[in-house]
Image (cartoon, rainbow, N blue to C red; front, side):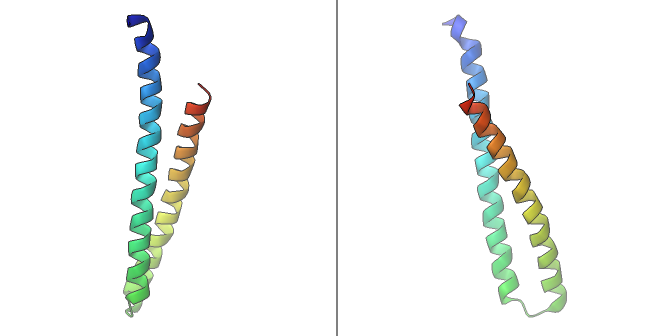
Length: 79
């Protein structure tokens, strides 16, 4: 019914935000694990330094992704 359409669309958008945030978090975790395996195998100092820098950047991105997911889940719970 038309009277429920706006509420449905709002909930759908919030659910989609939470799903997108979860997907981003999973992608970043996978990338972090891959970089860590590369670092563990590498013996080249310059490559190891680059990988450590990339891992540090990933840590920040993961922190932001966890925050985004938390906010999206809270939005869903408060409706």
